[in-house]
Amino acid sequence: MNAEPNIFSDHPKPTEEQLKQGIEVHDERFRSLVGETAEIRHHWKGAEWSEGAVYLPFENVVVWSDIPNNRMLQYDPETGQTTVFREPSNYTNGNTTDREGKMVTATHLTHCISRTELDGSVTVLVDRYQGKRLNSPNDVVVKSDGAIWFTDPPYGIISNREGEKRNSELEGNFVYRFDPDSKELTIVANDLDRPNGLTFSPDESLLYVSDTGEPKNMVVFDVNDDGASLGDKRLFVKLSPGASDGFRCDVQGNVWTSAGDGVQCFSPEGELLGKILIPETRCANCCFGGPDRKTLYVAGDTSLYSIDLDIKGATNIS
Image (cartoon, rainbow, N blue to C red; front, side, top):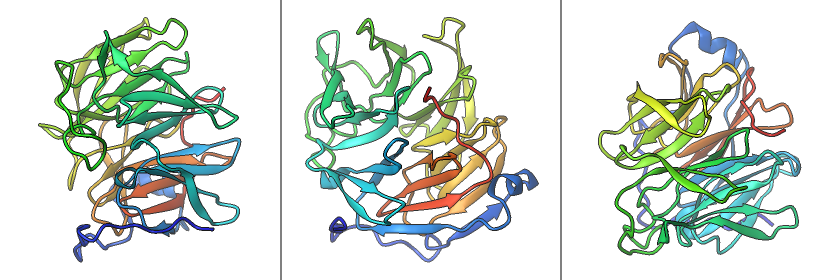
């Protein structure tokens, strides 16, 4: 049975401009990425705020978070059904997979990074820094060495809409690296206002991080030779409309990021290549999926969309 829709009565209505759907080519290189027959598909509508889409390769399903409804949803491309994956979810946000294909999740209410085991049980990996509760982990990515990198802005503690309102126990909003072997949690970036989405370049020499505080932009860090710390930071893009929330790289290093009008694709040099316009008020996140990793799944406000591409997504699964 499909999941029951639950869009709140005060949910913003999209404008005529926001209802546009299609593909915009801003650079001829984009045509080789989307192909000539690419079609945007709409799979399900009924979330209050879709976030954190992740493709689980062994199950061949897409899981994503419906944060205000305190649930996670699952789309099965073989049956076309969307069902409830977990409810309550403790207001989960971002999701990714580790090297074994297990889902790793950032959770607001329990201020933790957790892992869903193959038997369905949930293991809390880390929830405190130097004895203090994390704010509300937002997005997460796993490096090829197994280390878990995540952002920790306050969105789950500034109101009860996406968690539980409380004061922060920390002195800022940081980007962290967690070593699952040593259990060591370290701050790798402390100079962003509200760090949000993050992902590595395919060769892991760069870490992209969006800041949805002030100023709203996406920056890129050099990853130091030790693979565990960050070097120089510089502006990557300041996109419009909206802000970059969640994003992933393809195998060529292009960055596919959410935006106010859907998904925007940027070259490694920060050049806008093209857009996938999604008919929603805003878009939160995207991920690559399918057995060939050529399907881009898009968590767009109330819905889940997908589009088949001619480029593979980068992956960390061994």
